[in-house]
Length: 164
Image (cartoon, rainbow, N blue to C red; front, top):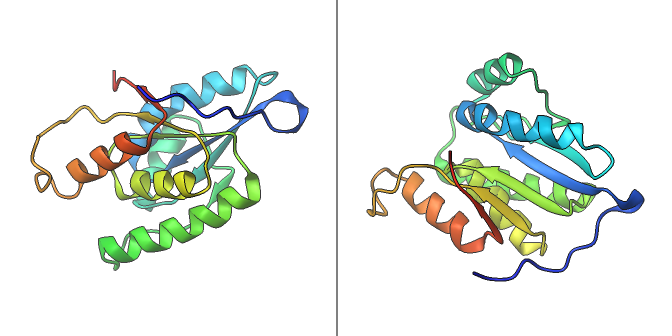
C-alpha cells in the first residue's frame, strides 16, 4: 500500500474535500458520506461537484438523497462519445480543481466521471480516495468501459474504501 501524500488542510484548518458525482449510483452511494462530512464542519469542507454525466437520473437521485451540487459542470453524456465526454470532463475538472484547490478527492465506482476526476486530481497531485465499485469481472473489456475505469482509478488512488 502506498503512503498518502503529506497534504495540509485548506485555510481555516479544515480539509476541503471534493466529491465528484456524475451518475445516479454515485449520488446514492456517496450521499451518506457527503452528509457525514457536513456534520463535521469543524474538520471538513465538502464541495460537491456534478459532471451530470447522466443529468436526469443524477438530478433525481440527488433530490431523493437531499443533496445538491455546489458546482454543476453540466457535461451531460447525451449525444457525445465516451471519448468526447471523458475529454471534456477531464478538462473541466482540471480547471475546477485548480480553482477550488481541494485537499482530497473522493469518488465512487467505475464511470467515465470517476476516471476523469481521478486523472485531473492525479495530474495536480491531489490525494485521491476511491470508494470501489463492487463488480470485478477480470476482463478489461467486459463490462466496457467500467472494468478499465475501475482499475485505472484503483491504480491512482491513495486511499481505497470498500463498496459496502
